[in-house]
Length: 259
Length: 342
Image (cartoon, rainbow over all chains, first blue to last red; front, side):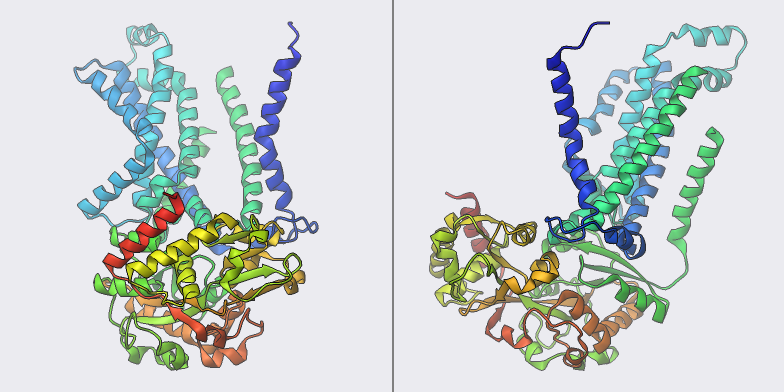
């Protein structure tokens, strides 16, 4: 094996430090006793406050979780089926459809947000958690669609033909051949959708209604009074959660690949 | 494994949907963030069984755009005075039935009499009133007057901030010149602009979000601010280092008010909630939490925390009024020139 040059090592280390230093500072300050930026002593009071006296924050968190999981689930189902159909059939508007599917990815979020708001107001749908869910499905869809499509375009289509030759119905071919093959694409589409949904601020800001404040919106309105250390504590809990989730999905993906 | 995952997802979906349709009494409150302590809200739910769903905003403009953009569905909002009159003009507010708010008599008449944005309180019930002032770090700055002229001092250059708020900054300059904070004369406003331009080189920035952190860490020594922001951030053991004062020239004051939105679905619950907030023991808890003097007279005796200043300190303040469309445009133009520079 070729030895890595000291330059590339330095760049690597620099990047790692650059990426993780802010997180480290955040973790440290979540244990700070005082509210301000100066260190005054170790304390768990912000964690106590987080778990015992922050009902609004947890409601915002619950809203985020509900929207993230449900919108990721729905957009994964629609996006996967769409990608399979797109890959399978040839039809005249195909190239336009592909272009159209890029739109939500390249359009500035603020335009999507405003247009959704105008749409909901025009149709007369009251803004609520449901409208947030609809908005998130709409911007998650193209990501799932393209991830699954990329996976499908990679594999040898003659496998499906072989399955059909050997007597599989089109439904069997779908469930026994196509879906298992595209599972890694589906899983990564689902996870991408969850991530995008959890962190979205701009679009959510426009389409949220009473009782539908999500975590990013809550944190934003809180910064006017200085970022509360409770938010730091929550961030640490979320970082730990993400690490556990990443680790378990890695094992899950390995498990699939090994099959 | 896959089945389990599917079941979990479905369970969460069903739970999410189920929570939308419970028959319990509800109230949708759209409020400033950190304005009412969580336990005051949860005690209301304990007493009445009414579930309060709170959403928060951090500026009047944010609230106003949400309401006008079809974000109806809220019952109670808490606009500042000038926005109350804007919302009355827009027909967004429900006229109040005062017989259902017996706690209104607790409010200080001297405060009520100053209200011009809603004469006779047909649409709004004052909640809290306060004014921006100046906080000085006494350890760093020794000789100074209780006046806006502190922003002229070049020796404090790079150690001062003012709020990122058009009405507060221009209001300060207008007060400094001896004009009204609701001035409409373009010539006088131009004078005020020149005053702010003179202050500007000495300021680090116009900031309404993170200045309190900088003040607490000793980076900024003089900040135009709301008292509660600074004291929430400053370590309690060192509060005696902070001098919070209202400049002798006067300050622009605000009143935040409870209003019921037109078309609110939970009218009874809204009245119950507003009257609950007018109760002396509850008003005292809120004032303790914010460390502000209460406009609720019987509540003052029940307070356990000494407020950052006495209620009478606001006597020299002038209430910010709705400027009207034309003048507001003028203010916006001046503010933009100050911020962008031209």
